[in-house]
Length: 75
Ligand SMILES: [Zn+2]
Image (tube, rainbow, N blue to C red; front, side, top):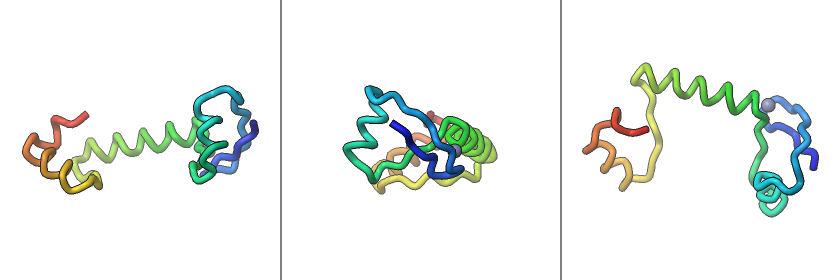
């Protein structure tokens, strides 16, 4: 199936049998991000994480637990 990247509008060909293709077919609300974009975003996220200014928005319960453990323990 052909999918369009939500960020750069690149058209990609997905294997119809792949888990990602199935998920996109069954739940059109899921958006597709091409490899380039997801790599770019994960790099920037890691870079921001490294600055220590990164704020992860988590559900309250998780947040409390992570505060106790210290943010640096979280992978
Ligand atoms: Zn893209």
